[in-house]
Length: 228
Image 1 (spheres, rainbow, N blue to C red):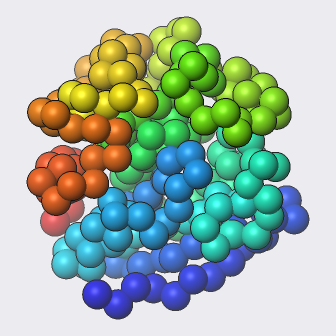
Image 2: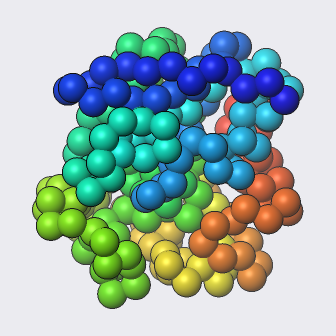
């Protein structure tokens, strides 16, 4: 599989690495989780899927992660959301299907709120909205005060989420980092009537085993079906 070359855009003085695959719309957008990047197993599997189907795909690294410049400890949720918005607005046009992993699913939901005319569907993998609120006892001790504060400003589950597009949530039954209940709370909070939760038996948080990735790609293919 030949990957697109890494390129960069400047966002607020930060150099953001991305790989953009040309192809049919809607464009797939992959958003990594906390401390992850665009070269993980799920991202590469989605790139392979996009290549096979001739689908456009944008992957990126948040500032301070992967190939992007900066210090990870300077990252905050709102800065990373700003980078995603800039990448979407500058590098893509037309409809999007956003695939977000863990924290990337939280950012994906905010993207759908901010660009409702662009986002056709959201696929959340082990989706983790509001983990600064409920997950600190489980999570990484390296989370900074600035990141925590930005997360508290972007909470979603304490109110209804006015998203109307289809949303698909794929979650591991045995996820020890993001409880399955978070996916169910997200489902209930969403205004959309077209929300489905797929639970993978014995699945953990990473959902990177071959059968788990196959299940994720089936969900992506389902929301893409009118286009492929």
